[in-house]
Structure formats: C-alpha cells, structure tokens
Length: 116
Image (cartoon, rainbow, N blue to C red; front, side, top):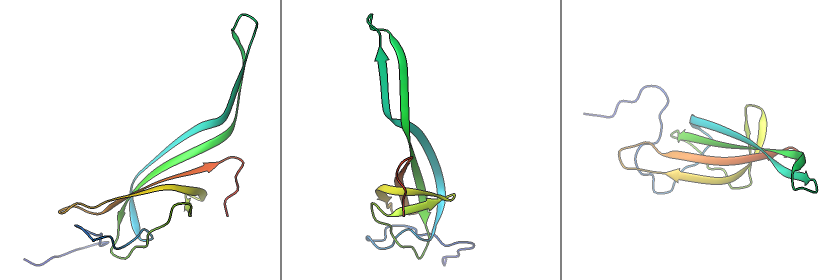
C-alpha cells in the first residue's frame, strides 16, 4: 500500500535533525500574564497597606506540527503571532517513530521592551 496524503503534508517519523518552523500548523497555544515589578508597603504592625505592581510580562507556549518544508527559528528570534511580537526563549522538538514531529516554542513579550 502506497502513502496517500491529502491536505497539508506534515513531517511524520524521525527526521534526523533536519527541518525548521516556517511552515507549521499550530496545535496548541497557551498564554500567561504576570507582573514583573511587584512591591508592597507594610505598616508598623506588619500589615500590608499597599501593593504596587507594574511591568506586564506575557508568556506564550505554542506547539506546532511542522510541515514538509520548514525552517527552524533560533532562540532570541522575534516571533509574530496574532500581530504581537514575542522574543523566543526556548525551542523544543519532539520526534517519535510513528508520529508527527512536534515543535514547542516558549516566547515572551514585556511592556517596556520594544521588539524589532
């Protein structure tokens, strides 16, 4: 029986380290937001009377199923997703015999940093 692929061809099996992520299909996307500059003021009795937070940080995790022709980004490359620029922090690739190649990218954007 010969291979018959309909639709977008994705990499299947183990690719021996070849390929990258320009042609990929998003499988999952998660987003978390936090404040990086947090401070508080305590009164004489040790009770918190003020809490201040600033500098929004957004972190995204994107899992991709890589397509037949793809090109891998590098750590610190800028990734644009839904018109927002993110700085790539980590790239993980998982290859399993009998399954599609999956690449997971973790990237961040910060309120006071303008990415190119």
